[in-house]
Image (tube, rainbow, N blue to C red; front, side, top):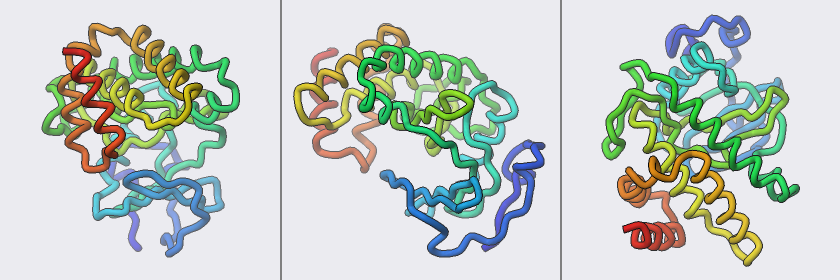
Length: 247
């Protein structure tokens, strides 16, 4: 399989990111994670391969990540190569923010505030004009992640590291906050303890991020999430209730 160097997908000059890699084989390595759209494999050399299950190209995501690595102080995995539906990047060791909350629930307040701070820093970055734009995302010039929640932040050696940049776009900063609110509010959990934890995480995040900003585009964020075919029936019901309660 041919690979695309970062000279082709973005302006990145780190030697580690430019080095050539051998073709990725099938199966590429040990499966260490699976999501709604992609699987993640440990390649055994300090890197992972994130492979889309569909024919979606990984190259726009890789180009955006490379650009952010050069133009921001945020922690995100360094990208090595992108080709078709495959993206090779650094393995970031550590638990996700969600895993840490489950192990040490007393840290939920601090993690909710950290999530809000990370997003505020990200949304303070002006995106270049070549960043993707999507229907349903209010127009703007900031970088939006659109999937920022505790499962997409790894507590790595360099600090909180944002992963899963599949949905990165250019748009209005408030929409990113509203999307995180919608995603976390729709998490399907069982048991009173977990529901209380989810509610607390969402409330502290909203207070830290700005309730008025979230409310200003909440309806649009709910509609955007409901249009996603990966939304589960449980999430859909939760989102419809949230929309009704905020009218």
